[in-house]
Length: 343
Image 1 (cartoon, one colour):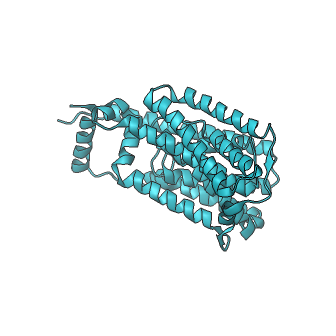
Image 2 (cartoon, rainbow, N blue to C red; image 1 turned 60 degrees about the horizontal axis):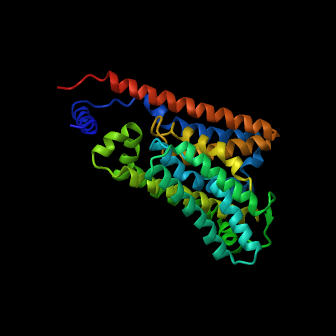
Image 3 (cartoon, rainbow, N blue to C red; image 1 turned 45 degrees about the vertical axis):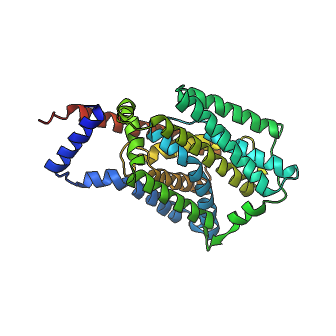
């Protein structure tokens, strides 16, 4: 009998023989992060009423939507015990590819397809090397990210590329319902779909099981490599899609835009692991963490904080996120090893 089978049997016995008591501490652990997000918005709204002005709300939701889109694939990879640190460089390369094609006379449809193609290519590259050849994910994605960043800089020869028009992508970004961007609704729907895949289908259980015991998952007949392959391709595609949207939002190609998203991406995924599933990255937690970071950094800017001070906040939050995830996983491991065997 495999470890996974034993774990499943133990879980069934536990579920049948005991009832888990819901305590205030459990509820706080599960939903406390959402209260923190709400508190950030309430505090900054009180300190700076312009924080909740329609224009500022629209700008924050637009930024949060693009960032959340970029971090979706990263969330599931970290949940599966893997990593992709090339996501922001892929977004930058897609951004510069779109800008270079449009500036060269191509239409926005062709340029957008070119940008998305970048995501497919780098997603397949990472997937083949990590999932197919089983090379270390951190080393591979650092290398592929450096390659993407170098090509992005070469396209514009180290400088940005200004765009005179934003095409149909800009039209999509301009669509709104009051202060609410239509893009925010689309991203919210995408995250709702991702939550359904994570919570309601075996896909989500396989992702979390891979982080806990990949060998046992493979022994149970789950196509782990195929699943990882899909996750890396997904990460590349959503990162590139975010880069395409940023080309229209910024009306330019920015070769170094990925730098600002690196800390935010890791911080959002790790801090988001404190919501709902303690210590486990999940899509709803990531979305909440993106809103938290967007509100916190925007509010700090309105209060006059310098860019260096905001970078310190980013770094500190990343350390907190890493520390909390490590603590949660070590506690879970101790609880499992201390659990008495059932007859």
